[in-house]
Amino acid sequence: GYTSCEYGDKLYLGTNQGLYYIGKDASVNLSNNDLKLVESSLGQVWDVRQVYGTLLCSHNRGLFEIKNDRLYPIETTDGVWSVRELKHGKAIAATYSGFMLLTRESNQWVAHRLTGFYETALYYEIDQMDNIWILSSRGVEMLTIHTNNYSFQQIGLLYCSQCQEYEYKQNQGSDGRG
Image (cartoon, helix red, strand yellow):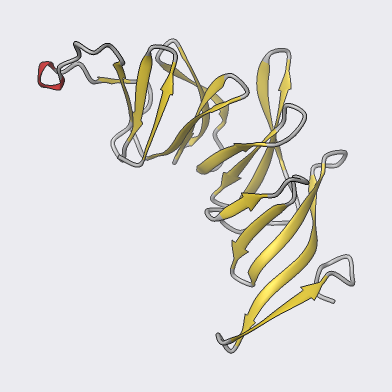
């Protein structure tokens, strides 16, 4: 498996075959086929985690909320690697081609595609200021989110020149190229 998460009275297991669950009851016996497939989850599950009290599944088919052992789509136009919490009840989803900002509206997650970064977002971290540090084809980039227009601004770039000498370049222009 690739990922697991305890939620409620179940343990969820994400695999390359789909998302499975099993009761956390001590009497569970795997030889009795207690492992059950979450409905509509066939495919590659990259991550499953609690985000502000909800259970989200990052999948090769998109991002889903898990309710009553079933997947409910949040966004299905791009594969999603993972989701992480931001401040103020928001979250960020790393996709095969950038990021999405997740907000709660009418008790539902809503995905907003972020502009300004369009590479796969497999490796990233979030600092205490909600800046995104991402490993990209250019190096390690520091991005800040503008929630008013759903975009990123590059703040800095740590890049490798000739694969031995590292240099940090502070953003001096609006495009991040100096």
